[in-house]
Amino acid sequence: MFNKLHKKSRRDAVVVATAALVLLGLAAGPAAAVPQIMSTFGDQIAWTGAEINAMGGTGVAVYRGGMSNIFNPALLSDATGYRLDGGVMLDQEHEDRFQPLFDSFDSWVTDAAIASNRHHYWQTGFAAAGRIQAFDFPLALGLSLADRYPFSYTFDEELLNPSPFPPGSGEPARDQLIEERQRDVSGTLRTLSLGAGADVTDRISVGAAVHYAYGTRTEVNSVRDYITTDGDDSYRSEDAYDLSGMNVSVGVRGRISERVEVGLAWESALEVDGDRTATLTDAAGTVTIVEDGSVEYPQMFRAGLVFRPRTDPRTVFTVEAEYKPWSEVKDSSLPDQDNPYGFEDVTDVRVGLEHTFYNGMPLRFGFRYLDAYADREGNASVFSAGVGAPLGGGMVSASLELTKMSTVEEHQFPYPTNYFGDNFNADPTARVDDTRFRIGVGYRVEF
Image 1 (cartoon, helix red, strand yellow):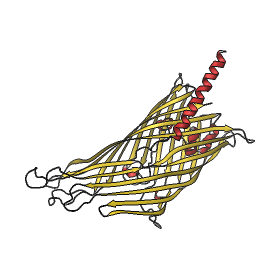
Image 2 (spheres, rainbow, N blue to C red):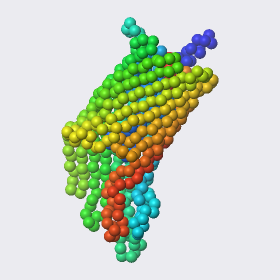
Image 3 (cartoon, helix red, strand yellow):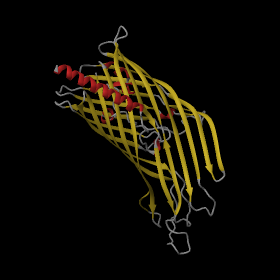
């Protein structure tokens, strides 16, 4: 009698967890924040899941349930039953912008902060995987919904009068509000993926996945001019790009020994197209332009190695690399141009470690290092950690990530030049320091 009650209780917990994960995936929220330099073509460090991101975003040689569709579909062959994954993440984006400050002798004094922004975003993800026996050989299928290229970015600033004269001196008032400016980019290019994996031999597994990408990138730039004696320069521009397209990925996994495995994967170039609607509203009225457009994202190559040392409890160590030739990006607005944006090819190096204790709780660490595709000198370092705990017949996981990036970029909006002669002269670029702090929680259930 006790065993029947125990089995029924566990079955009910699995049903509840399954329903919660499905609802979580269907109610996917806005994408994670990204630095300005990644807001045009999307994030390079998209969040996938708490368990994955805690280990540095690795998955080419390690089974990740349905999310193996993205990393290496050959790993789907590791499914022994059914598995559901879901998660939610809070992203806090810090951006600080600096300008060099010189004295009257043109000697550099320090870097002065000219703008500082703090914004928060949410993101969710969902995946399912399972083994079927509908054919003569065991075949595993995976289904996933994940953000691949988030665009979300927000910049706010107030332009104040840099006048050296105090109020009441008959000159423009010091620190008088001149303009309020904002750039807001929202949306994500999300992929719904279906993959399959199977064992060819005891040592070789292969897999393939098809990805349907969809999403709308919306950028709004607005300026409110408070000094209208020289004309009202207020305006609001909106650019909405509705995108969709498909691509495929294939992968292979080889077992060198019971302790060492390698994985290789290739994802084809993703071409997305759709309607692009641009609207400009200023003092003269509103103008709207609608046209067709397309963007082709580069292909990518992944390789990974996993090592499972002879330890008890289990330890998993994995090293991976992803190569993405961003110089192959194509944009229909700039046809017949080779690398129109001057992007750099990027190699993303990832390291992950997981150690499981006797009580079944895993402890995870990860590290990533990659260059920015839009800045030759820019790079990002990602430090991550996480922990898991058995709960309700499944595993709840939590992750922490800290990302640091420093780049040199053009200003979002122009600053006054030669103000009061040459007393105030803005440099054409600014040093931008980005700090991202992400907290993720996920749940995995297998049955």
